[in-house]
Length: 309
View 1 (cartoon, rainbow, N blue to C red):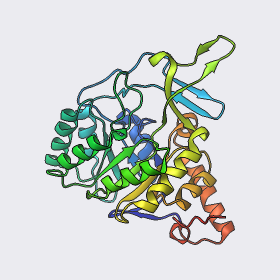
View 2: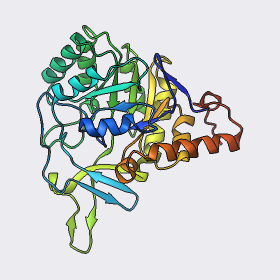
View 3: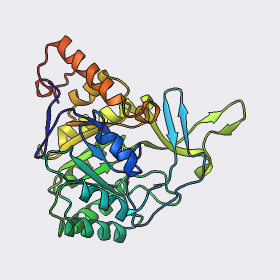
View 4: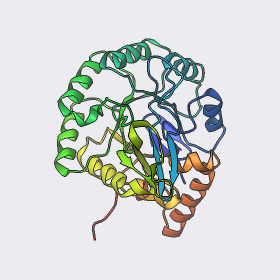
């Protein structure tokens, strides 16, 4: 019932982790491999190990979370070794996420992936909002087009991009026009809503330290924005560019809504951080129950078929 096709893979569940949550170490990645997640994505890697921003840099909020981790990760080679050694026939699909600090760093990592034995799926993160002094690349449309043009001059393995949220329909139009020029395998939409601020009224302070308390917002706060981005791009992208929906997933109903709006796979971040990898079984069971109540035999019976009132 929950099987879903993604590229050349058949996933037993459309639900997986969002990059940045429970995927920094090989132990955490193995936890995901042993869970009911349908696929696995690594922490977005930079060329070198990064300790990230100072603590406290994550806080749970009443309806979600705020974080400014600052791309803390174990470095590109650490994750390349993992995904290459675990690139086994019949295993869960592996997504290798990279987020260079510079254009040149992205090109370096993608060249190494191209030359490696890794045959999984690469995600280029163009949307990290938590680096002091670094703008989100995907809000610069000419630069995004320039980067993708250069990358696809040499990169031939399956590649997708992780995008920030957009808030204007004309921006959906403009970004889709750029993305449709390239042989992208997928987009991942959305990353957290950047540069939110949450105040602890008891102490009259921000709840995280980096960037004077400004951080990416996740959880239920962002679901309407995430669904709008998923459906906005579903309406505009070439059909061969699949959509991974991310943002505000805490129940099987949330997964259902992402799929209904056009997502092929749905990622879980804040709720995974709170609940741990056992969440994948719960979400899958809730999704299956909801589908049964509605009389759906497969995800394709309803995926992308949202109606307007």
